[in-house]
Image (cartoon, rainbow, N blue to C red; front, top):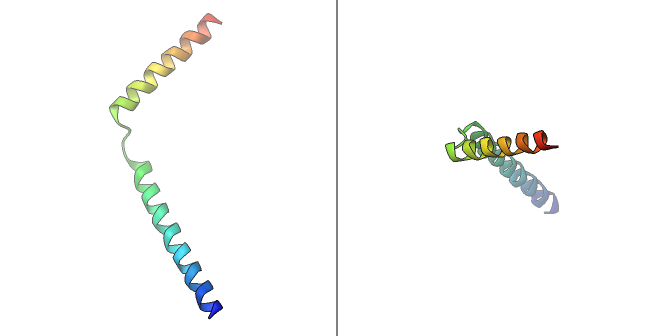
Length: 54
């Protein structure tokens, strides 16, 4: 009985792992929203300004 439970737990963990990898893979391939691109541009400009003042 313990062996069956262990195998079931392992199978469940494998399914969860596979599903998380699929979701992550899909998410990584999505385009970055424009508002985040704009924010990154602002942050890069601020960083460049601070480096220039140093």
